[in-house]
Image 1 (cartoon, rainbow, N blue to C red):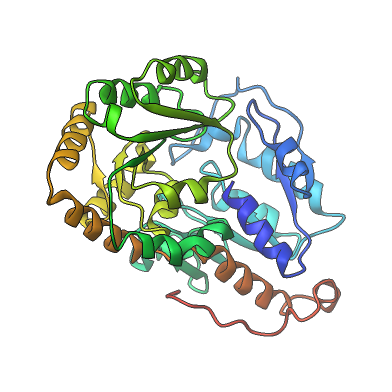
Image 2: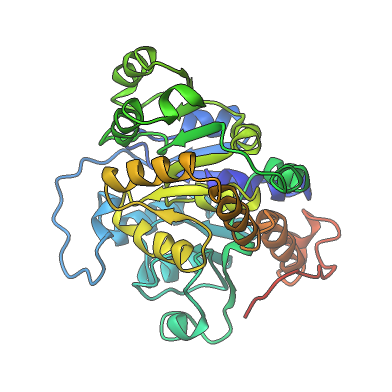
Amino acid sequence: MRCLTLATALSDLGVRCRFICRPHDGNMLDEIAARGFETIALPPMISDFATTGSTFSHAHWLATTAERDAQETKDAICADPPAWMVVDHYGIDRSWEVTVSAVGIKILIIDDLADRPHHCDALLDHGLDHDLAEYSPLVPLQTTCFFGPQYALLRPEFAKLRSVSLARRQSPSLNRLLISMGGVDKDNATGRVLAVMASNVWAEASEVTVVMGPRAPCLEDVRAQAAAMPGRVEVLVGTSRMAELMYMADLAIGGAGTTSWERCCLGLPSVVLVLADNQKEVAASLARGGAAFVANTMSDVAAYLARYHSTPAALGDIAEMSRRAARITDGRGAAKVASFMVSQIGRLSPTTADRYPGADEENELAGDSN
């Protein structure tokens, strides 16, 4: 999804974008094509190979060897090499990148783990705590690095709604609750949150919107649970209105993934649950910055909701959390990164530059980069 956001920003600057994916279960090739982008499907693989000699934990996510995946990717692009290859995959490291970059392209890595070496021209880590000191041993000296949520790849509708969303939070209320645990929510965190709410004062006093993905295995159970709730609970599936829903909400309960930066952009106070290991750092950073409340258990969720619904001083705390969250990102990360990438295209061969008129003009970036 974040690569689709970046591709849209690049397209707005006149750049042709293609996606290379392997058709694992749950792949998004059809959705990518529906957004108007070209797709290249690598041969499907069966995950029965043994990963040997890997020094990082997600190497098996490729479902094949890095050597084979890199060669198949290289073969797919060698007849029409792009100016940039954007790599967003925890199972890829320097060895893969060296092979693919041999066709004469620049590589942008999207990473937030800092757990493996890279061979790249640019690196984007939108986490709050990673910095150049942490990545220095992992990337070439000349790599341009973009650190922090100011470069998070958010869809443009979040930046567009930012000013009106922050304005309405100057007079905070606690009437509308948004629950969003990610598209799949395989462990049914949504259902557990609704169960907590069923025995809480929020159940009848609030409007609750639940957002789920069409592939969520617990979708029908959540629908039945929502229908049995005493208050008004709406379940939306595969909605494209997330920015609007966040703007309208007074408080959100969700995971500590990319949606954290969407909530911050709009100043939406939130209760954050850690739904995957790679969300722990984000959750801890948000808590340290006072931009969210981290719930380690469902009992924490219940206590938080009860406290903030019954205490008059809660509105002041909510307003402060909103202000702290809004400082984290302005939602324009995709535009900033796209502008940088286009500015570098003119430094390649004249043939490549001809495809992107004006790409040799430098674009000034807001925020910090190294």
